[in-house]
Image 1 (spheres, rainbow, N blue to C red):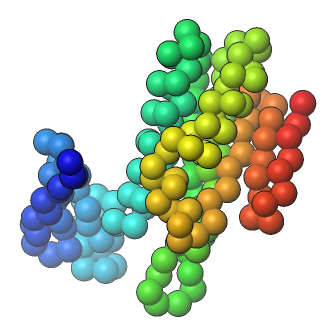
Image 2 (cartoon, rainbow, N blue to C red):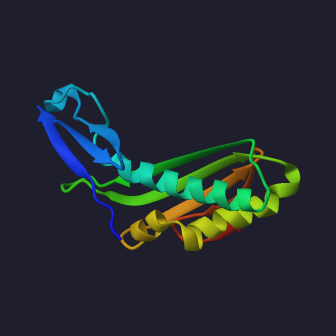
Length: 154
């Protein structure tokens, strides 16, 4: 099995990618010759990571009978200062709201996604550091820094 997409140049700097029947529009800002009709391509790497781990967490928790009240996954990428412009590190911030009794299950599930399940995270971690932290009901539960020091709160 393989994934395959098709990307069509639409003129100027716009490209439309067909991904599983959905059109993704990529474009450059006007200052770079585009019309700003879509995102530049590089941030889609961050989008893929947020969606992959977010779907892991929701799916695994649902199988345990746990429903979250809210979840936001914010992914930031540090960008190199020289060409080629690449991400040099990525950080994932989970902000989750749920029942207080589910705190440990949520921490375990996010850890499972980061350590074993999320394929996008594992691909990216082959080429750069990927760190993460988790806040549950506005309380920081876990943080993994670039120095690989683990800080658990609770």
